[in-house]
Image (tube, rainbow, N blue to C red; front, side, top):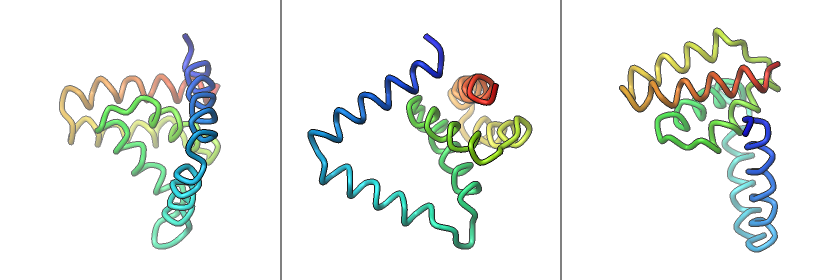
Amino acid sequence: MSWKAKLNDTKSQLKSLNGVIPDTSAAFGALGKTVKAEGALTFKEKEYVALGIAVATRCEPCILFHVEALVRLGATREEIGEVLATCVQMGGGPGLMYAGKALDVFDELAA
């Protein structure tokens, strides 16, 4: 299955879940909006942080969403690479494995 297909499947699963727990989903969405508002860091910088955390915690669906956002925000492969290098430094072997996945997602979504 391609990363695009996995991203679409994840979005479909979340849409279904949101229908069951609309108040929780709305609250989580509101939290995301306040956290991602421009401040000392730009939205793009915050997405880089989120990608690093997604790789470190080995959350494949999170990697998909944050790479998708970074592609929309104009992130380059080199910028993603620097974020992933930091993930490897901080996460060792598991960081290396999930960094590889994240770069593969970027390559597919940016194409």
